[in-house]
Amino acid sequence: MSGSPRFPIADLANVHLMVPDLTKATQFYVDVWGLVEAARLRGVVYLRGSGRDPYLVALHEGDHAAVISVGLRADQRADLAGLRDRVEAAGARVEPIGPVTDFGGGQGFAFRDRGNRRFTIVQGDELLAPLDAALTPRRLAHVNINTADVEAELDFYQRGLGFEITDRTNIMSFVRTNDDHHVVVLATDTIDTLNHIAFLQDDLESVMRASGRMVDAGYPVAWGPGRHGPGDNVFNYFIDPFGFVIEHTAEILKVDDSYRVGGPADWVWPPGRTDQWGVGHIKGDACKKAQRAIPFIQA
Ligand SMILES: [Fe+2]
Image (cartoon, rainbow, N blue to C red; front, side):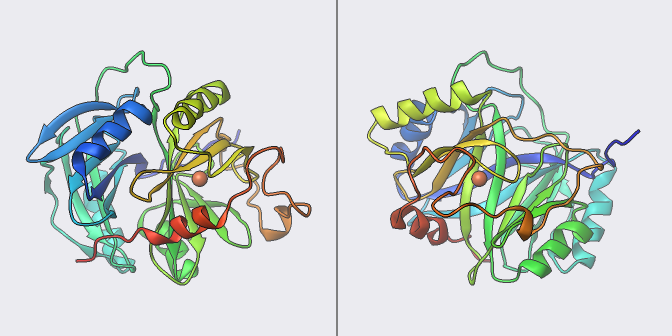
């Protein structure tokens, strides 16, 4: 019987974003995007979804839009030391393991990858009771990161973090660390910036209804609705008030180690198509530009 290996990273936990207007950002992510305020600590606003994560997005006020860090969750406490050794051996600059001061707490450490991007790994953070909140994203689905060296990046995710490759297209490389087809996507580019952040809704209906709420609030669909090739997930992309590209998604393909890893030849669209349905808004230049524009805060 096929199954999955035990991954030392269990899931994608959170993103910390710097925004130029904390009040406006909080209003947008609560009233329009559907997250729920969980806590405010030391000027940081922690926004949760309907699932058990203490928070999905932490908003920090700053002078421009940027990613401060991407947070992963280790499967077991005993995995932390091994992960720290692994990421360091794979080329990351690591910080010591210690108590996590963000909402939810736990133990963990931070590291900077080859692109000087900050990642955190937490374990033992206090999980919350799920919310019965329609159209509130359940959890983060994936982050998509532009990389100037995709081969080095893929090596790092495998050797450093224990991820596995599930698919590669001409531009995108998909890696997993649980039974979701992908948790991180690496976009081949010439710069090391954020491409987009995807939030998991319960189903297609929720994606569409949450998308309608965005349209009602004056945020047009940037790409979609559609169904992706790799991962088979439904999607709708938007641009937030500060230029972050954000995605409502659902129905991500569940895979195990019997999944046949696909290559570029497996994922060729007919002319004019960029998804399985071919009915949604085609991605315009504004979205393509936004998908390269958000930097990570450098050390
Ligand atoms: Fe995505």
